[in-house]
Amino acid sequence: MNRLLTDIGRLKLINPVTVASGTFGIESAEYMDLNLLGAVVTKTITKEPKDGNPPPRLFEVPGGLLNSIGLQNPGLTSFIQDVLPLYDQYKAPLIVSFSGSSIKEFQEILSRLEEFQDIAGYEVNVSCPNVEKQGIAFGTDEDVLFELVEKLRALTYKQLTVKLSPNVTNIIQIAQAAVDGGADCLALINSLYGMAIDWKTGKTRIAKGICGYTGAAVKPVALATVYKVASNIKIPILAMGGIYSWQDALEFIYAGATAIAVGTGQFIHPDLPLRIIEELDFYVHEQDMDLNSIRGKVQGIQ
Amino acid sequence: MKGLYPVKTLKFLNQSYFVLEVEAPPMAKEAEPGMFCQILVREPSLPMLRIPISIYQVDGKYVQFMVKIVGNGTDLLSKLGKGDLVDIMGPMGNSFQHTNRNHVLLISGGVGYPPLSFLKERMSAGNIYWIHGGHCWEDTFPCDKIYTEDGSAGIPGLVTTGMKRYLQHHDVEQIYACGPRGMLAACVKIAKAHHIPIQVSMEEYMGCGIGVCYGCVIRMVQRNPEDPMYKRVCADGPIFDGYEVKWDE
Image (cartoon, rainbow over all chains, first blue to last red; front, side, top):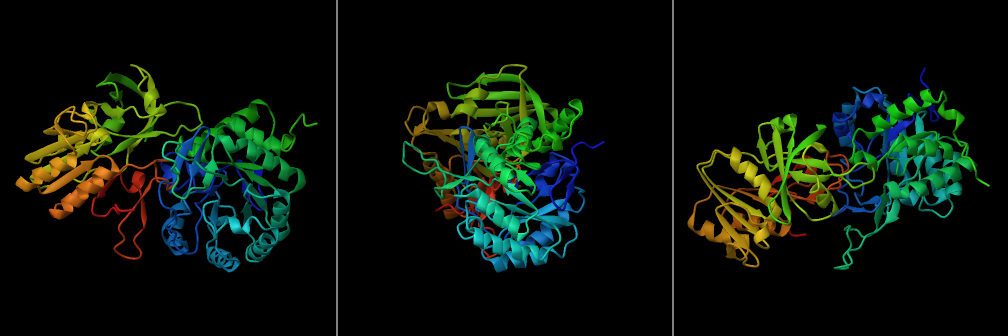
């Protein structure tokens, strides 16, 4: 019996473990069997090719990693021609992450991707902290977000996940807007804002200055965000932010997550998602339980 | 490729540099000059990210890394002892392209020495001349000519001064260089002035090391509008044609 079976809206996953967009690629297949993942999530694509941000793009700080990639990607056409076919051979549901600079552009991308049956669903990235006009502009205003999701919903019967930013004043209002628009699932959280400066020279460590912050240090922020949203919103949550172990995964499920994604942890162990699946599977069998029995059942809050 | 390999030896060359040798037959088999490995210095999980270290020497089933202690990661690595298991991914990246040309010049700076050492070992060219530079005597290793900025070993001055001098009197057909970015930029400028092809080994802050995160990119010369502005050091490099890199940012 598969005790890890997970339902994230319109998609059933063999387990709740996926990969965070941008931390995974077809190159990861050399280190793990992609067939065993709950789902595969691509790096965010945009309509036109994107050069990304100038280097340096990375800097490690205690407990986390600063990043400023800026959605470097080959663009939609090249993605369809060169990248998409590489995933044909894998059974895991393929979720394509995408972003746009206008509602019309989001619609164009989704319409084009709808031609491909192998795509199981979409992750709408409205929360990248490293591009100004793309992404996060749509994830911080609930009216804009509602309109975007509603228009995308009208174009597809496939899984529609909306990835949100924690960098907002009222996450519940934003989450509710995505739900009202017709999202099947909410992905929480994208990178926090971060910055690092060299005290000797006064120089920023990342070329763009302000950048994204991920890794172990953001886990408490992610847990709080997931808990807050899960307590108020009744659609599945795909949780991410500092997940390095099966224990981390369980904590997020207690907070209310349905599924989890491994991100920065893959940079250390590209096969980390598989390890987490194996160990979760072992744990639920050993405990004779399933994840539904603990989902959202965080204890001791007074 | 990823595995746990036992340390065979860890020898200090001086206060700042050490050579780590691991028993890693599959890696030793695939290693080519210019490739690097992603070494994990400590479990568990929290970044520290892996440290990219280029391959210094391969001897049978053993792989050697020459490392300079520059921070926490390399300091921890230096404390390993015989029999300790090290988590290493590699060999990764591309390698120096061999040349059929006869007169080859190697230019290295500081910790840019090891990949050129491996290259020299595997090269068949008849006439190889190697100039190495460093800040002080600690940064110098066996080669044909040494330059130090503080004059504590070899000739006082920059390695690029030595390069210019050598090229005035010799018809070099291919140059290979590894060192800090400023040195490489100067090397390419000089090579260009002499119309000599040059391959450079690049370094950039690295995330995943396998090509998925796009964190370690460098700016490229774009000859056509569709050419990528940035390429990944880990997956598209670390060896690049010096003329293809955009140096003046």
